[in-house]
Length: 208
Picture (spheres, rainbow, N blue to C red):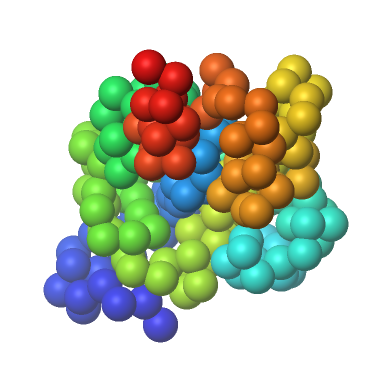
């Protein structure tokens, strides 16, 4: 069961669900020191079952890939939104994450009439929406978005690993693992590192 209130659910969600236009939205990549933050939005088909929908963090990588393929082929609509490293540094990671989610939701075709957002903050949208803490574990559409966002971002980080070898992006995907922190100290920040994040900012300060 989700944590949304009965009043809000009664007001918006049943009509939207009947119209098959409820989307779930979630992001991946708030914690890494490098790379963009990626969001996905998904409108599931209520007549189609996709096995294995759950929080992307609880799925092995190969299983995520399989489920992501099913989501892309069996949902009514899905879309990806990205906020760049420059936008993260300019706006802060929270606002950049909300921006990525708004971009994903606005890219849906057909468009959503109602949005379920993982977390406790809503991006500015032109449709009704509800923020659900832990929604990536309770709402199937948010679970689907979580999986697509994670798979897409991981693919982007593997591409960045080829462009910026040595940091190990294909292994840690930009998260502050011991390997990443060691390579960051040895090589210095790349252009895809988030300069507003403390470990990167500290290294840049040493060079000034």
